Amino acid sequence: MTDSCDSSTLRPWAQRQACCPTFEPCIEVLDLTVAYDGKTALHRVSLDISRGCITAIVGPSGCGKSSFLSTLNRLSDLTPTCQVSGSVRIEGQEIVGQELNLITLRRQVGMIFQKPNPFPLSIHENLAFPLRHHGMNDRQRREEEIEKVLSRVGLWEEVKDRLHAPALGLSGGQQQRLCLARALLLSPRILLLDEPCSALDPLASAVVEDLIASLRGDYTVVIVTHNLAQAKRIADYVAMFWQVDGAGTVIEHGSAGTLFDSPADPITAAYIAGARG
Ligand SMILES: Nc1ncnc2c1ncn2[C@@H]1O[C@H](COP(=O)(O)OP(=O)(O)OP(=O)(O)O)[C@@H](O)[C@H]1O
Ligand SMILES: [Mg+2]
Image 1 (cartoon, rainbow, N blue to C red):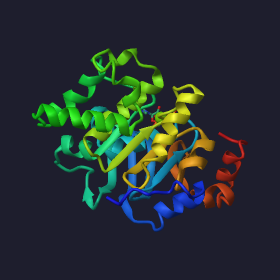
Image 2: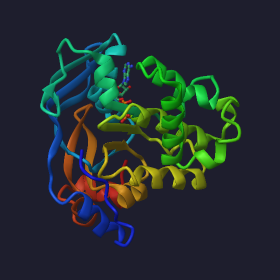
Image 3: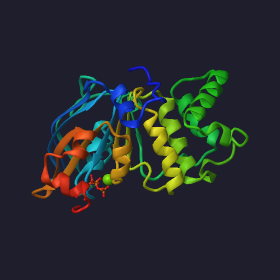
Image 4: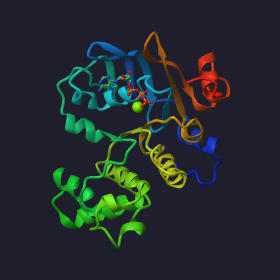
């Protein structure tokens, strides 16, 4: 894991370059194909994702963005009709078609969804439960970890006086930050975010977006977003997904600056100009 960046004095684009000066593959995807019940949803996707950077996955509805994310922590295993072939290497380790400990994998590769999904328990228990489940039996240490992670997501001051209130009583944005806290608690290396702001109002969305941007350097972040302005603001790299002959694939991948300012593919150019998709 790289050191986090103290980039408070830099402008956004310079900030990103300071944190992600070189491309170092953390996730290597080669010829990945995903089908449901024999119908191809994603066709031969090859894409490397750089460590410690934010990579945005963009593209129109139905082109396989969520299917792609779900192969990166084998969440796709939970869909019995889903067949995955090709190769996904996480820090060099192949995860497609391998016998491996999925709890360990998902601890390393955390995931956040569009709709916040806290457990129907108290705010405190949403964090204490996973810590106990993963063997942290020292109560004092658990409490320290809970305060630390709630502070990390900017929630501590907002909830410290009602830690035992139901998590479902929090606002949508607070619930999403709690879910992020729950994911961070287990010290993942990689975070997969599937449209994490799209169910939130603009103010809550901005808070969560800033939080995601602050993860750069410490975590490898892959975020699916329909919000191109958001991708432009926070992503270091962007992968453009598109349906070709009825199945999704990557049509262009590069640094956010290049992809937004001078896209090579005319479809990408039209999509980011708002003309297609
Ligand atoms: N569980 C499933 N069973 C059958 N088909 C599925 C399943 N999940 C996804 N698909 C199909 O796979 C294709 C890609 O879907 P996916 O949800 O990955 O797209 P997406 O890019 O995330 O779309 P959106 O932007 O709307 O979330 C679609 O045709 C979809 O209908
Ligand atoms: Mg999706």
